[in-house]
Length: 507
Image (tube, rainbow, N blue to C red; front, side, top):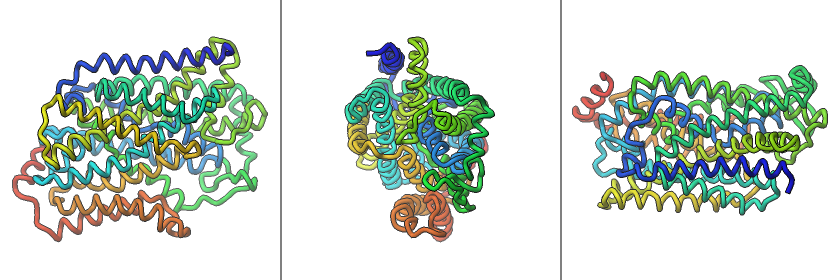
């Protein structure tokens, strides 16, 4: 075993051990389900901001986004990043404070329970359906994270993909069930720091090996359409391919997805002081813009390194950061430790999302389906136990989905993102800002959004032409229209519901 391999293993082992230790430290602080799922609404502004963004970015930031930029140039990666940056700021500005206030007023600790209490759904039908949708889209989302871990270790150490993926999943599941929301948020904060170190280090080393910043840009200029925001680079044909307005809109619409992402929304609900959300918004927005900008640039750097032969071409463009980190590790033990930190950053990006997804999906099953819908009575201790068992089961299903080593992290995340934005985005916005919105409208819009995501992705989008647009856009639009039309055509909300709405609005 070489010194570079030892250095990488040491750095990654220390990082993984720290996540388990954090889980253990917080394991004694979960006496209620409110603690386990929401941290008792005691989270500070920095932890709230960075855990929200770390859990949101996922392995997509360090694998998917640079991979897209490397393979096809600036257009798709840049427009997607712009859409997400705008969506991040809008979500924090419009949704965070109102949701924090409203959810506390109603004593709701999960997104499905907020819907039920907002619309006084005593039968908890909307609770069960929204929880089911969360599970449906979160399981493959978590699976994409496990797949990213498997790819990482397989590329580095030539360890069997399935073995590496399963071990990674076990570690994530372990600290999640031990420490709950507080452990997840704390590890997410650490993971965001590790991710930032990884991005800065890769850019610095990559630009140096590529021959400088000018060399990176000059190489990109030589590739037809590579730096153009209205075209992409066709690697196979060596020519520019038009990137039309429909494609740009498909990228920008990613930002709309933020309004419906459960593991981001729950961070808004968990902060201790809603006034501190202003601080959180600034921190989150700045970090997202910088992190995504650097991630896109890494794709350009990787291409320049391949051009001057300082980096070997890779079969999978999503492993560009892994390949650069491997190159760093060959410069002595200290460099290997640094490379290990970079690779831990990829793990961090993956784990920070997967743990949040597991927790959100678990709350949907144990809290919303079993307790709220089926009226299963259980003590706080038993409820937490069921929640932990649910995390294990959902994690196991995610592992099964991730068994295919050829699955694309970017594509899986893209579909799950569309599912949440389509099913919940319009429902969240209209339930917070339109008092005429009622249960029938919200439930109908939620179902239409979720179903449209599937139908458009697998039946309509393949038709091509006008229909070749990101499924999030039609899903969100149809969901919003359905909510408005059905709400106006059915009975108006009761005065009690309206009073609650006005109270939450006025505070």
